[in-house]
Image (cartoon, rainbow, N blue to C red; front, side):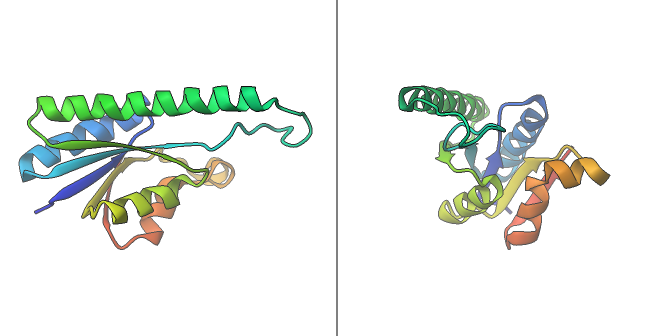
Length: 147
């Protein structure tokens, strides 16, 4: 049914649920898995632009984030391979997570996106936003959302 599945993960407990489901689904379908972690481009703060941040500190933080993101997707790849699923580990630097997920799914010709949702409602959803909702409403690729 599915040939290539993209799973978006940030390493949290909730996203690990999506990872486990995506790996199991890929194994059942004989599909390839693309594990994706989106890494922010630069440190952001409430004082953005108000406090000078040294370029060395920015580089150090960015490298730390990239290394952490790579470790997350490498762990997914390792899990996938242990279950007999061919996998690819991908990290993308971007400040717009949902658009990056959609772009990566298109680039890697995925026919399913698997991701977690916190299920926030009301004011929390309004204030915190919903990457999952944006992906659902802006892609033509099938999306499986887990909570």
